Image 1 (cartoon, helix red, strand yellow):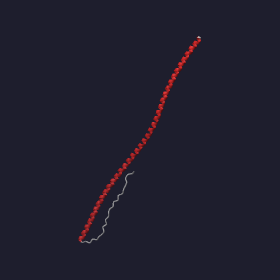
Image 2: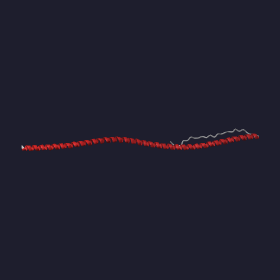
Image 3: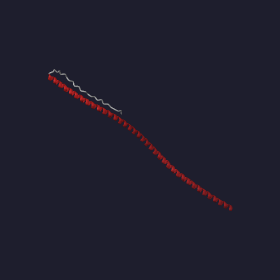
Image 4: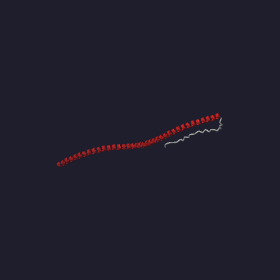
Length: 159
């Protein structure tokens, strides 16, 4: 019996050590499992954040492309505005030059009409003097010619 008792004591001791080791191993395993679950939750959050960032990146890239397109459109509009302004300035200069020429021509026409009127007046006085002096005057028809000014409309600048 002493042998049996020693065996039982040793057996009980071994069982207690094994149970103690199994419990310790179980605690370590549960701790590792809990840490792995926490890491998995963090990774899931990181994946969701990455997906959100990817969607935001695509949206921002679309907005950037729209802004680039809009910027080039504004550049084209600015170039067109500049070209049209230059053309308008050139046209305005040509118009002013033509207006000045027209004014000069109208003044010349007025001067020539006054001279023609003076000539007609002198002719009438000459005819009246000839009649007074008794000189024979033949009536020759006087043709009055009018000078016609034709203005050509021109366009300046290129659109």
